[in-house]
Structures are given as C-alpha cells and as structure tokens.
Image (cartoon, rainbow, N blue to C red; front, side, top):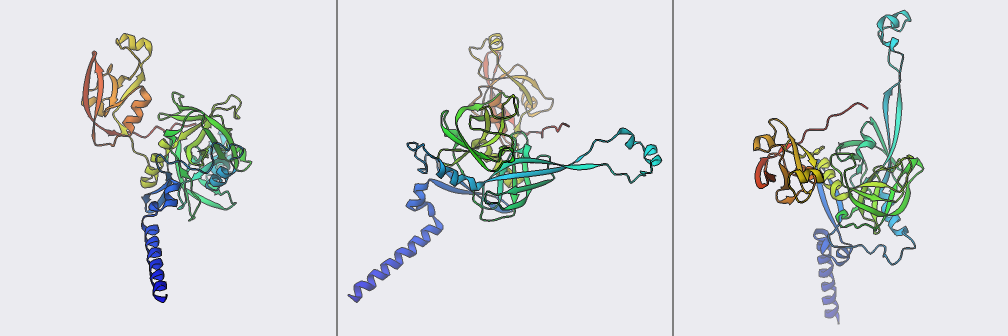
Length: 400
C-alpha cells in the first residue's frame, strides 16, 4: 500500500511540474488558453508593449448572439481599458495691434519686457489602453496641439501622459502613462466585420463620464470623404459625440475593431453617422509608432485621380477600374522609372488597384528603398514598370 501511494505521489508531482513548465513557456497549448482564442504579441521601444489579439478564426463565447437581452458582460470586459483624455494648451489672447508698437508700449510704461497675455485652452477625448505597459491608442486630433495631457482611468485613477508619436494622415496617436499592469483591450479582426453586426461604442462623450452606446455596422470601407489621404472607415449608428474621439468600437464579444474618430452631422451632435478607423489600419500604424515614434510610408511621386465613366470612355476602357496618373513630380521615383501622365495604374505588386485610394494604400505599405512592380495601361497596352520606392514626405502643416 505504501509503495502504491509513493508511486501516486511521484506521478502527481511529475504531472504538476510538466503543467507548470508548459503554462510558463507555451501557455497557448493549454486547453483553456486555446479556447479563449487570444494570442499575445509584443513590440519593442526601449521597453515592451504586450498586445492581445484574437487568433484568426476564433470566436469568443463571452456573449452569444442568441442572448441579446444584455451586453453587460461585454461592457464589463472592455470598460476598464477605455480612458478619458484631457488636454490643455497655452494660447495667446488677442490683443490690440498697438501693443506690438514699441513706442506705444514705452509711452504707457510697458517697456520691452511687456509679455503677451495667454490663457490655457482645454480639450477632451478618449483613448484605449492597448498594453499593460501603459500605451494608449487615441486620435491625433485629440492630442495634436496639447502641451499637457492627462488621463483618467475607469477606476478613477489619474496620470500624466506623454506623446510617443502620432500620424495625422490616419488621425492616430499613441500616448503613454507611467503605470504597469493596466487592463488592456483585446484586438479583434475588423476585416472580418460585416454590415449589420452589433457594435458598442465606449468613450467619454461631452465630458459626462464613461458611456456605452450600441448600434450596428452601417457600412464598411467608407472612402472619398475628403478627410485624409488614407481612409477606409467603419460607419456605425452607435451614438458618438464630441469626447468619444479616440474611444473604442468593439464587436459583440468585446474585441476592439475600431477607433472612434468623427461624426457626420449638420447639428454637431450624433445623427447616427459615426466613423471609426478599423483596427486593420490602426494596429500596424500603432506598432510603427511604438517601435520608432513615427510612421514611414512608401511614395513614388505622382498625382492621381479616379477614372470617371467619361474618362474611361475617352481611354476606351470598359470600366472605371484603376487610377489615372494625372501628373508626375520631377526627379521623383516614378519620374526616374518612366511613369508618364496618362498612364492608368491597375496593379501594385500584383494587387489590383480599383481606385486612387487603393493606389495610395498599396504604395504606402511598400518599404522605402526597395523596388516594386507597378502595372499600367499605356496606349491600350499593359506594361510592367519597376520603381524604387521613396519615402513619403510629411504632410505640410497649415495654420488654422
């Protein structure tokens, strides 16, 4: 009997030791971790940002679509990872032009040490904690002009934040707070989203406090809105208002699929047309910012326009697919490679170009310094041209 007990004890000890090793080195092999469908990844920038994303093809069972009476479990899961972002900046108070005249200042005894009057202007937005190390994803326009940024967590804790980097061309920014072990969001797959899917928008609208609203995905791939060069928005009728910018758009299982950015409205309030940047766009931009502090895009130096039915007819095209090269910058990569005005770009590295938005996105994704094949239609004949990709110039800042 004693011998049997000894064998049992040794077997149990070995099993527990093996379980400990697997849970430490390969936790994804355990059945409960496989069931969750969550995989971890990390990007480095002096430290480590640990990101969570649902494994492809996996679906969470947090909320079954057969039980639509409550999404409290979804809200409970996501709300701790959504924060309020408070900003302020020093602005000059408008003064009379005579105060800039040194003779006038001397007459009134103001002297050369006269200082302009300034005041602080405050702003409000939201953000999403993307890693336990304190990285927060938000909108560029939320923090762009700020010289002070504060963050309030869902549990009431507050902290100062620093800008890691931002990208005005997608309206995304990453800020960081000096806290560890924070509740971070799990990234979903926005490319698997469908029109009609239920979504929740979480943020701090109008400064009333953290708020959850519900709606559906009204449209996907919204483009040609004149908002930025790179755009492919998720449209939702979940209520979004000022202060929601930078907040989370999550699916019915609580996984992040978008960053709420703006609304289309004639009243200034929500009328059911909200736009979110999909995570398939936001995540790689965020990772670049965390790694390098900025975003680098490919560029060939051309002006393009969409093919209208009239233009397609003039070029004897059966459809409007492609991007018309309307101009080529001197000494640009495209110019050096032989691209000409009037060429119709139909593919980049074998990927079909349907319009100018496709052309910009596909070109921007190419690494500068490497060669890529661009396929064009010239004089009704298909032609492949190899172009050495350049670095896209930073957008020119314009005074407001």
